[in-house]
Length: 384
Ligand SMILES: Cc1ncc(COP(=O)(O)O)c(C=O)c1O
Image (cartoon, rainbow, N blue to C red; front, side, top):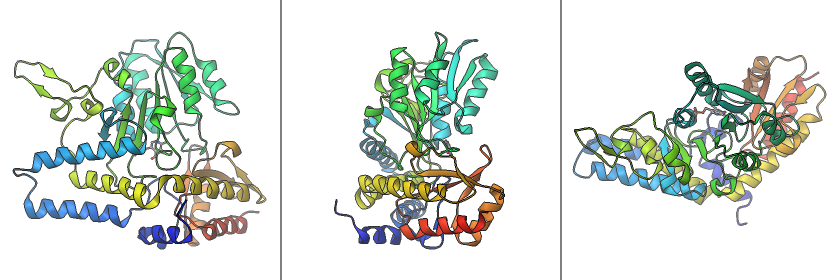
């Protein structure tokens, strides 16, 4: 693999924010690359100078969307037709959850380590249609935990690929295999996975996968994508519709939906953000190089986890065998908000996770061995 020490240097140069402090909060939002910023700025400049309408405007917008879907499809091994552009992970989850013909008593399985992006749409379905939510506790064996909740009433399994709270990587491919043996579709929240670990839609075999632009892909806020497996498209009853969803419509009320996930896109979007997302994926693919990035994240995160676990008073929550880019932990005698403050004083930015009463460090490809060492030293210094 060509990238070496100079590679990390070049990458860090293209991420100004990571030069200002020890950036360990990609799980909230990733840093922007210069390429991404320049693409956003160029699109804004173009809108300013040439107006947002004009002979080519519609065509240009359509081309940008097509190119972005294509890049996303290549990055995650899907097909452009299976991808809808969204504004965030939560939107994609809502689009899918609201696309079922829910009946009272229908059951949905989720896990005990989910973000509100999954939980809230499910709570709404429960409140509105009387669906039942069953919670699988991943613990030692997540597949077994899901299997124990399965029954003839299960209509959907919705879970994260990587938990925002515990940081654990969930075996979604195995869960999808189990679910499909029972004819149940699987929806994945990939917010903490897309851009942090290899995500291959085909290999995972899941039915729906929602992901954000602004976290591990280092793209702009207000961008995201939803993958829908081709065979599943026809089963979904969409709740929202607009001019971007249809091929054509007639005044008398008929409309034609495309045979692609694009039917889940609704209307106008912010073009500079889309230009930024396209640039960030291009940058990740061409400059960062995904295989290098994923290997580096895995190694750095494993080191951070191992070293943290050796510090007296530290409890690491992220299970050893299921590490992605997030490491969640507690330090005895130091409340999570205080720990975040203490680290910020040392120039290290992590975050607290209220749900699990812990803190979470996001370890990304741009972090250095020295930064991991500084994190360990800082935690050792504040611990008992
Ligand atoms: C697992 C998970 N899902 C969803 C979200 C929300 O992402 P978005 O703002 O893209 O909807 C987050 C983080 O904010 C997350 O960690």
